[in-house]
Length: 390
Image (cartoon, rainbow, N blue to C red):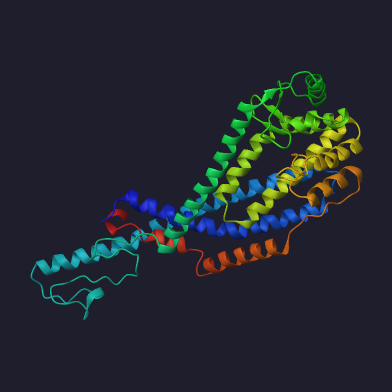
């Protein structure tokens, strides 16, 4: 005999497993829609492009939550429906036992005729995993569901540790940073804050642990500059760099990035989630480039700042380090073209190996679920004993 809490926990476990499988093809479809949308929207609509990438990631989360809820509701409905048949079987068994106790000549119950040994009036003829009157118990969730959820939880914990380490590293950089003295940087920041409409105070500091300008913090944001930013950088390029970072501050991109990393951690197994996440970062930086170019009044200065900074940090661990410089030279080149060529349509890269993984993952999920999308419902429907169903 199991208790209701164990049944509900097992039901939730199966629903989580089904949700994980469904998310593979669901996220792939959303990634495909995003790919089409980004191909159609011109580069000059930077805010729309960025909003589309965020909407795609939000849709992945919402669809997964809805899928989980649907699985749970379907399982609950199946439990109610299955409870009627379970009650009939139990009452039939009780009627037979009462008749036998009264001394009447009766044959074995219908579910046991010609099969059970003498003295055993009940035989378990229900499928594996269902309630058995003889055994008085049920099986747990399918082994595949249990293993899948365990592996997912282990992977999520490891990737969440990566997020925690990133936050810890950011806090360490902030602690070691030294306030900028002189250089006229504070005046430049104040001017740019006014143009961008940022009411919060934004500090600027130097940190030797960073190789590119970065924004840390939400309530009290701080712009961290590497020492190289104060040696030989032209004033206009420094203005472009600071304008780019202040654009991140205005939109609270640091918070968005943390939430994005959390979604990546929970969907670490899903290549579509990582592809959508990469597009968010690409469009985020391009959007900030556009804001900075508008503020300083010269897109060419912003483009020059990108290229010059990339050359300045070429010996750093990350070549195109500036939040400005993106992930790869190809990304940097694309950002420069966006600034220098208003009609440029950026290429939405979907490498063949990524595309292949997406298709294989979606096909695998559909193949498993093809055996019955109601698998989770059927298993969950077998988790309560007839006594608990009545």
